[in-house]
Image (tube, rainbow, N blue to C red; front, side, top):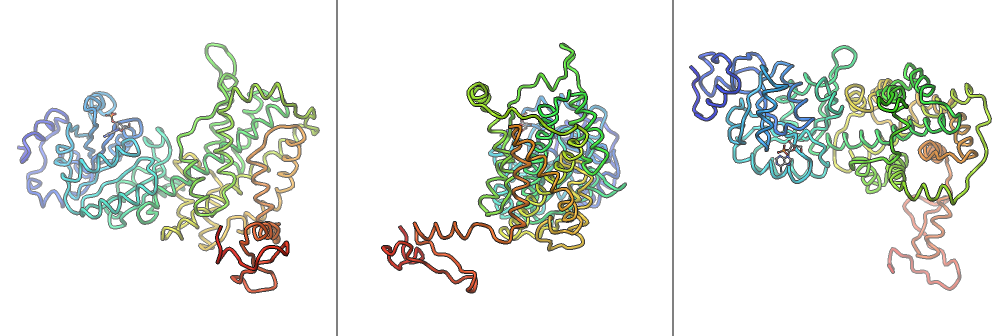
Amino acid sequence: MINRKEKEVQTVLEVVIAEPDPPEEADEEDNYKEYKMGEDKNFQRADIGLIGLAVMGENLALNIEKNGFCVAVYNRTTQKVDNFLQSRGINKNFIGTKTVEELCSVLAKPRKLIIMVKAGNPIDQFIDQVLPCLDEGDILIDGGNSHYLDTIRRTKYVNEKGILFVGTGISGGEEGALNGPSIMPGGNEDAWSVVKPVLQSIAAKVDGDVPCCEWVGNDGAGHYVKMVHNGIEYSDMQLICEAYQLLKSGLNLSPGEIHEIFKSWNSGPLNSYLIEITSEILDHTDEKTGEATIDLILDVAGQKGTGKWTGISGLELGVPIPQIVQAVFTRCLSALKSERVYASAVLSGSNQKISDQSDKFINKLHNALYASKICSYAQGFQLLKFAAEEFDWDLNYGDIALLWRGGCIIRAGFLKNIKEAFDSKSDLTNLLLDPYFAKIMIDTQDDLRYIAKQAIDCGIPLPSMTSALNYYDAYRCARLPANLLQAQRDYFGAHTYERIDKERGEFFHTNWTGQGGETASSSYNV
Ligand code: 2AM
């Protein structure tokens, strides 16, 4: 006998899962509370709910179910619920629901609901729709690509109604969602102990059984870390593309030859998901034409905005992340395809060719790519440090490196070394100052210079690697020409400057022309 108050739910359960009866003692509400998640497949109150059966939601639901949990699913277009339960969800521990009320009524308490709907307004709309059906202590988990400021706002809003909110970054695409993504949860820490068993069980694992899922921090911290992950991803991809272009246009290598190079690089310090898939992409042949697929793809890059968000945050917080911003702009430049084609016939470049034998060049290119990658991660982690200060997040950078070690798009062998760097010095100012990475930079910087020079001489664009080199050289420069910049600002705008022979914080103004007054802009603003 199913002892249910909700008649509708009973009907749905019978139709959808047709599972045996729950244990007798589970009839009462209190017993539901005691019921441990995932323990009894026959128990019909779901461990967790998932809203939004698009690609990520569907795969995530399957991942949660296969880890032993009963998942109630709901989608605005309810036909998708039926389709799912009749296809990939068939004969599995899912409960299909057709209304938000029904969804909430089948969930064990405290309710845990993962929202996988389109980022932006749809999330706010769904929150408003679901709130009346929830009780104090229930937990809403936004697993989409939400902007961290939205997550900060939503955490506060939902909290005021007595509900706990978790905004979690989930990276790894479709495959990761199904088999183990990297999960970056933030929000109300009170929710962590409740959602931890589910989230850690479905996350990617490294070193055997270490989950790539750890509590990140308050309100928007999880989504912020995911955003920076994406910014670094933009930069990683751009660096790989630059190496590809040098091998293709500089050394005139075929896709097959470049495939072999990336394949060999993947077994060294550059070992990473992105290098691995690059190698596989270059080995792919178009079925129709028999040509390398890569040569048939239009060179116009798309973007969904998370790189831009990272760039904007860097600008707002005043953190130098030139490679991430450069990667976004390089995508924008690629989009000007017809202009570029026209310009290629109008504007001349260089006739020089790469002068060295290919083996020597390829080895140096490997090191240049590695050095540039380190600079890019140094920028990403520095952005996190400034954001932690700004938003009062207690971020653990070693843990963040761990979260990115598996499951996500930027997963890479060297994140283990980044974790070690921050674990041994949690207040490390910049990754470049960690002894392990400082040594690599010192050892590889000449190769980065060599590659930059070759590209410049041959007229091959190298925006991100040269940006990395400039970052490195500027960061290690004890005296930059900003003294002149300050003088210029003071000359035309009386903006004042600090002096090397005085204490910091004391500001001076010079009457440069003898005609301006002594009034500085601190007291006089044009
Ligand atoms: P749909 O299938 O009804 O379009 C990705 O777009 C997911 O977000 C889909 O599951 C989609 O549902 C859902 N979605 C988009 N806008 C939504 C909204 N305003 N409310 C609820 N779900 C929405």
